[in-house]
Length: 342
Image (tube, one colour):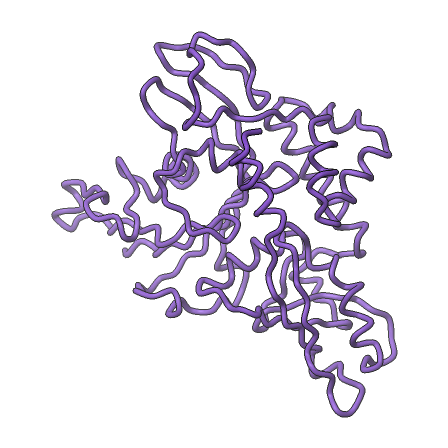
């Protein structure tokens, strides 16, 4: 890994979100009510992994009974299996710092959230995602399945503790590989070396490089807005579309495969010849049918956010993949769109 890539990955692993955690007023059994708890949450982590820090703070204020812990943001139950940084990027169009969340120890909303048994559930979700990613990249997940129990435990511990050095030492055993960065690629396209586990195949100057595991979260807003602070709050998860779909990374000689290309392959409803994107004049393509008003107005991509970064769509996708992936080898992309007008 190049020095600049190492630095970028280090920033991702060190990324954190300041949280202000409030105990739900219906569960306050002390007087006065406890002040909120302040916690720094790793972006690549998961909310249930913070419970050991938060529960001792509120334990003297809790009513009797068995715990069933969950979090909400402005009344919306938070899906515990989505990384904390992704939740923040998705739900806070205008970043809120500290991020005010409410913790509940009773009344688990099983109609909205799948059950969570604490760290064991989060670990199972991580390992399962790792297997899915390996299958997408390599066509099988045997490298994950063949890891020793100790290595698998140590890999999970490195993620849970934010220990990049330990993760860097263990992750090569999964043999996911790397995509050659568009900025530094100098090798001949005649090379048949496997990259990112995908086989390079020459077809008239085009190279099929890899399949990239992507989780795309699309938040659609019906009304137009100029500023992110004007984006309406989310009332239900039904307002968010979720795609768990690989991107076919195709490289043509002389052409850079960009983040725009990747998103357009996943969101064809926002593409004509090219998706219209907020802030990029002249790039929205209007067909003759649209010009005469006989077709609905195409939707608009207002923002793409990965690891808290509002991305320019012309950035090489190879750089995004090599630097901004989560530890389970999925690239999580949050997209804010203005819905098409019919």
